[in-house]
Image 1 (spheres, rainbow, N blue to C red):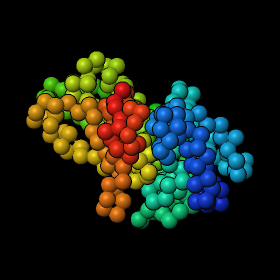
Image 2: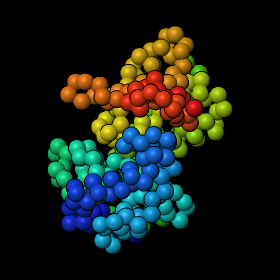
Image 3: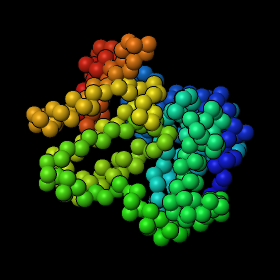
Image 4: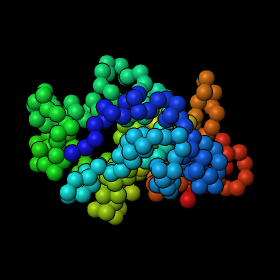
Length: 283
């Protein structure tokens, strides 16, 4: 049984509370990558004790611990944890996707978008039962109950042999602060493909974007020319090892940063502006 996400609504979290949470986490972990720039380069290196966060009551702390935790049943991990970062971002952020308490997305009546997707998929694609109550669901039955639905929804098969054989190339990118889909899920899939095929880097590259929300938004550089990167790889055999991302504001570029093929990261060279990609190397 799981706690009711409807209890994570505005009655528990306000926009101000979420901004305060993010500010404390950024203050603790921003400089771990050697650069204090408002971005957490790799949230996995950021160890946050929710109990030590100030300004929160016990209900808020309990909710955060649930959100930051893996989803498990008796067989192990069903879904990876939500990384820290991006908690206070408005517009396509946590308030819309996870905790509620903000203006809903277009057409949304549920407390949060994750609540809507999760409950509606189970109601109509798993059980075909509009009265299904998730709060009473026992996740030990998860694998059996979703077996049929998984055949047409899952995109988790690490066997890309047919794709490789026909010369396919795949670029997977994910924002570290994505509140809709945890970036740890993409990492897990990428590593499963690698474990199965030691030469997968010949056709599969992954890039992680610090401080970027779901598809775009957030404080991190979120605009990259993926089309050119793919065309250069397919047409000219130039495998993408480094792609420069930009952050735009009012039509002007305010920051550029290299995105490095995973598991490499952008490392500050020690001189030059931290807002310019040329000041960083992929290591």
